[in-house]
Length: 369
Image 1 (cartoon, one colour):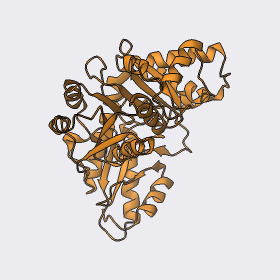
Image 2 (cartoon, helix red, strand yellow):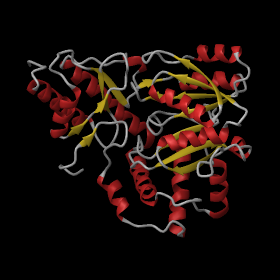
Image 3 (cartoon, one colour):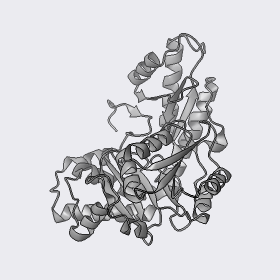
């Protein structure tokens, strides 16, 4: 990492390695066979992370993760389907908004921002409304860092014969999800998160049978995953101009991911980052919003200091000047800020970030120590 560049303690974009950035220094022809092989290798490696080669296709899509979420709902939910959207944060709210914009019938079930949805909740809701065809869930809700109990919820949904769509944007690659054990129609992630690539590409792991039946569902030409997959199978190419440099960077990031030890090693590094962050911030008197048992090692929400001299904008700019970029809070009821645990950073980096936070709070006369 360049010493001049700040470390991004955010949920993505995030700090990438020098090797990943260097991979973007090559220009690729979008129809060239070598680039097509790069795409095919990328999809194969991504499927391996979820043990999904037998049951799912990996369909890449240009754009941010939200593009891929919208594409998954638009492609896999029939126009006469109904989605139960499980909400405990801003990204669950976004799922509901996508359903509304796409004209898909939907209902919502919302819990507090520090309260996971439970399998019992889902079981009751599906018993009460037999018209529901699909359930949409945020695995790790980035608003707070809360982890929802995916395996338990997935099995309840399967028992009811319904389909599950998982937004795993902030968890894929760091938290284990096995497609042979957790039934789902779609799992959605993106390049600029726990795989430590750069932003610009989403991807959807779509159930093979469901995708085969999805022709004509999509509201959009560009976001039709069924058509995207069919064209890639036929030609080896993307339908429309691919984000070539993003693909190359993600391919290089995956090489490093596997060199590090794959998902177990990535999870352990992030878990270490998270624990160091929690421990060191506690020494400053800064409390995390979530209890440890539902805190994912992705991003941590902290209560803001109550001192009137604390203002987030000034706090942010001062910490940035010391080499670290934090994230504003996204809660509506209490004032918070967020610190990401992911990216090309280790526990030493987290300690340095907390030292910077402490220095800034002393400069702002919020901390006396």
